[in-house]
Amino acid sequence: MSELVVQGVGGGLAEVARRRYLLSLLVRKELRVRYRASVLGLGWSYVKPAVTFGVYFVGLGLVLRQNTIADYAVYLFGGLVVVTAFSEAVGNATRSVVTNGELVRKVFLPRELFPVASVCVAGVHLLPQVLVLVVGALVSGWRPDGVGVLALLACVVLVALLSTGLGLVLSAVDVLFRDVENVVDLVLAVIVWTSPVLYPTHLVESLLGPGSWGFALYQHNPLTVAVDLVHRATWPAATAPGALPDGLVGRTVVALATSLVLLAVGQLVFRRLSGRFAQEL
Amino acid sequence: MAHQVAVSVEGASKHFRLRHTHSLKEGLVWAVQGRPRHEDFRALETLDLDIREGESVALLGRNGSGKSTLLKLVAGVMSPDSGRVRVRGRLAGLLEVGAGFHPDLTGRENVHLNAAILGMDPGAIRARFDDIVEFADVGPFLDTQVRFYSSGMFLRLAFSVAVHTDPDVFLVDEVLAVGDEAFRDKCIARIGQLSAEGRTLVVVSHDLPLVERLCDRGVVLDAGRVVHDGPVVAAVEHLRAVL
Image (cartoon, rainbow over all chains, first blue to last red; front, side, top):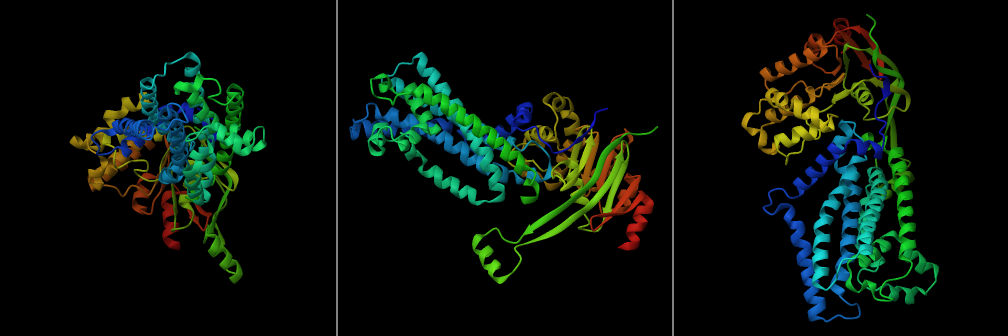
């Protein structure tokens, strides 16, 4: 017979990995609930980005003839895909523990499951967006290359790590102070401006001054790195000299390391606070 | 034969801080007025309790005596302020029937989800699936969204999942008042069968005749303390005397 064990001490993210089946069911539940009574179902997550891209392509490219950035539609859409995925993951993860409060109070399961499931759902929604992006880029004359594929992979891994780490911290603190939801919404609403999604990097460089610490900070924002990576991956003009900011490889390594540290901190904070979840909800 | 301890509660205590306000504005106003912003409430005084394998124990007491808190500590949903609570083997808590059921999923999907929540792996769920459905007796509604179930059907399905998870230790909190009489008897029979198989049972209920039927041992709590511990009949008498 097994040993006496203290209940309710979760193995954290390792435990989540062991209960993949439950995680997959939670993700499926989330998707099912979101697309309930809908004919197109998950198909909507293809339609929406496709329409968005079409509007940018026609509106900005053909009508406004915006040409300070070559292939602006692809540039813009690529960045938006990354920022949208990040926002969805972090926004939903922040609310995940509170939303599942019923379950948290009644049954013991590794609570990390909830924010992780939110990130996975965002991942499921990311896939069609990336497909639309790739098709759009092909239409604009982009051809895939090996480095680009690597950059795209690094981008996805980076966003996943970053949003899981942040999601863990924010969902745990949200249980104690619901203000967090509002702060997160506010930050997510402006976050598209803190990375080169709508504008090229060199405008920020000339504003903050080349080599200034402000610009270094801007460039080392992991989300900025993720946006640069997606540009490298799918933007047709990315390989032109001077089109992308330098030092992307180095910044990618730093950003991945930062995200890993954040993930470890997130796990620590989450575990520290999870003991109080049941009584606070 | 000396049975091993299945549930061990050593010096566990629990207090709650009842916050009257989270708001900054009210907090400031109340601080000026000298009104307390929170109150401490001791749900459980330092408590020791051993439950051996195969025992069926009823936790009895008035409302607010700490029964459910104790059950939550055992379930691991909450952690004690002091001491420790340990459990041997697989635990299934029926702290509330249908926690984790989602109204927009079908009965079938909910069975899978709920069984996985209660810790079953996919193989075990597949193996027990037919038993679960048969016990719940929801018939043609299995592939209907749970939101269209009658409340009785819903409870039957939820209960059925919980009793089929093959726990070593089974926690039941005031959930036996489910369904019609026939189903209730079926549930009680099933719990009795689990207990006869040598599984440990911890029941919280105000239904004293039922408790007398299901359990051998009664633990009476009052204001977070154990005031009586012994055979269930004596415990029920003790409780009736103080009520």
